Image (tube, rainbow, N blue to C red; front, side, top):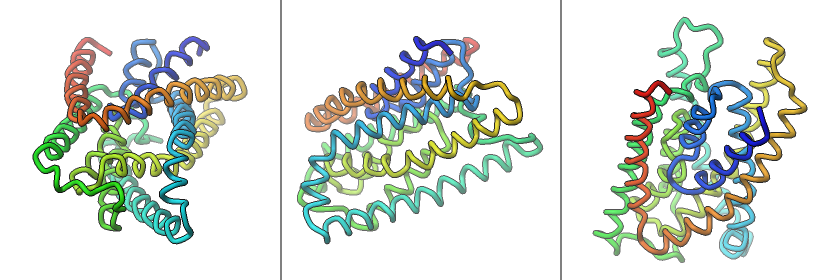
Length: 289
């Protein structure tokens, strides 16, 4: 793969990952338009490496807020860590259950089939985008109609709220297009969590989730290389790291934009964008992509 294509995908990933519009769907569509196979092990590893770049953007951007809120004292950190563990546990259980169910039903009888084989199917990405868009729109409407239900920023999440956010994140894992950040922040808003707190917690979950996914996709690529012998791991690793750096820089820009939109009370517009994107992806699918 050429460095130019890596840079294009990194910019798309970086700008879209931290906005609630499903960066994965945007990257998959871009890969399709560039003539690449989004479900191949090199491409799925590249995607998670780009996620790694945006994960570091999240850490840099949110660290001052996390330090003042969650690291202000030992009890505050312990409570934050407990909420993250609860949410991540629900994510792992729900996500893994859905993935195994899909692999044992849709892929029954298909040798070595994995959930990643669905990542290039635009006919699945389109409804996932639409579902995320509807959830975001509903959360935006709820916020405007029930402003008193939204907690102040001084209140933290409860373990039940964290668990439900983790469940929603688990539903996002198997499906490209079902925006993780959009769904989890919207779920927090519907549960009465302040938008800024829901945003910070959602991206904290992303930091925890990214390393095991990177490890999984690395093993998948190494195994594919062992079987097929078709990938130059050293060259691809370098290009992936380059993409991660570009995604990091683009991610910082996206985070600043996201925070401004959250503060401006225009959350629902992201949902409308996802609905429009779902329609465009459907058109691309019928056009043969």
